[in-house]
Amino acid sequence: MAPILHELKDKNILHCICVTAQHREMLDQVLEFFKIIPDYDLNIMSKGQSLNLLSSKIFEEIDLVLEKEKPELILLQGDTTTAAIASMAAFHRKIKVGHVEAGLRTYDASAPFPEEINRQIIARITDYHFVPTPAAAKNLISEGIPENKIFLTGNTVVDALLWGIKKVNESISCKEINELEKIIDPSKKIVLVTGHRRENFGTGLKEICQGLLEISQKESIQLIFPVHLNPIVKDTVHELLSGQENIHLINPLPYPAMLWLMQQSHLIISDSGGIQEEAPTFLKPVLVTRKTTERMEGVDAGFSFMVGTNKNKLISKAFELLKMPPDYSNKKNPYGDGKAAEKIVRLITSS
Image (cartoon, rainbow, N blue to C red; front, side):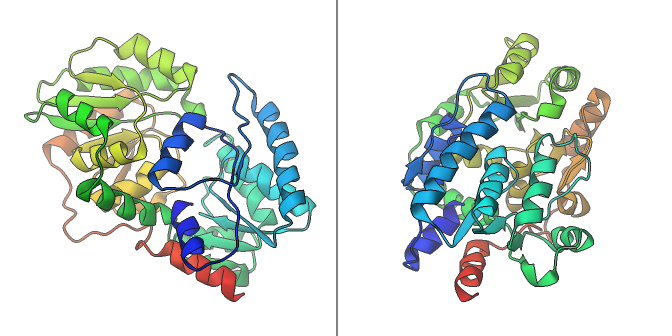
């Protein structure tokens, strides 16, 4: 959302910024990097809270904001519980909704969970569907969404990445990047790993870790794994992978350091939707550790490869791509051209 907020500010369009802080630590460093100061910080995060408790907090707190501000339009992004509940709260008050990154689907309610149902709920409410790709638009049309409510804009994640990596390469000083430079062996290929999906908790995550352990046995490879703060992820990963040679388990990285590390990597292993959209800009292959993805455009373009949580698929495909990297010389990011925010703001102000 940062590129949209900057575009609204540049165009002198009256707006206010509300964050729920559903993920406090991850949010704050992004706000600082993009120089964004929220008008409302609901601070609803608490340790171990259920999705139902989280939802009830968001409903209560966002309603107070809507009552005070009485906006004509609420803009929300993605498929989080925050986005779903905010859309329903706006609907109850007959406030129009604009959905950034609309139309993504797996049509599997359990994967990703709860995101797939969240975005389907949002779609029934939304007045402006800002879709990243033609495939996303097609999904909405097949669900009966009127075509005059669907706008092909690309994804603002590409806008943010281009702005962010330029800042990283030109001017920013980041202690996390300095620390990464100390632990990375320049003679070895870098494999970046992330993981956080709920549907992989338990057996799936353990099998992924077993695959990573075998990949790390090859002396020419080093794995950098910023471990998610969720205790279910953190405890499993550290139990299976800590103290292993060629595996660096580190704390979650701030956005600029993550961009820098993606740029340095030879291969990315991840269940993140955002990384599937970001990696093509860096011309990096991604092994997707999920059984389904709502981002098939990356698969079709040869940037993403589905391996699920099968350790044997993970191992064989990782070695294959590291040995013979794909030729991306004539490829471009299928998720946008870096002008999505400009298009979205133009659309909402001209309607």
